[in-house]
Image (cartoon, rainbow, N blue to C red; front, side):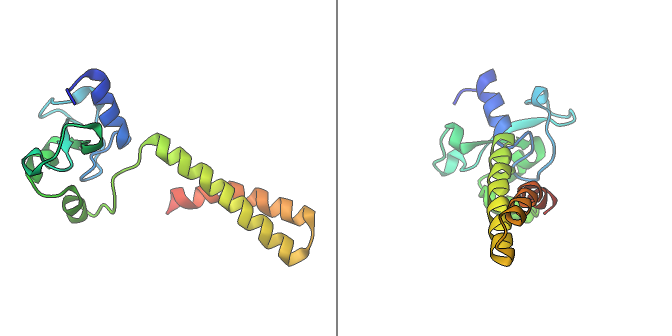
Length: 141
């Protein structure tokens, strides 16, 4: 994938503007601007030297220091060394997870209240509470 403006935005958005190796915040406009705050480069998750490709699936945003020190090591091992359990999520993926948490929270709360009280009104209140609290639990975790 050539470094077009659209391509760079897509790579940047995949991790919500964070380095996928250390989690540091990046600045979209500082692509390749070594020495500037939030400077970043495209990182090949699987290095080209190890058979990696230039497709969007293999490209991630990484701060300059992480990208250059990674060399041919795996992204997973570098993230582990930096204390990150996984790639930072895009804003779209975060919203999808929050929506799913709301539905699960509503279902669990509603069923629990219904079984406990056999009351439709209590089940509705518990489902509403679960839908509101579900996303908060993920964000706080």
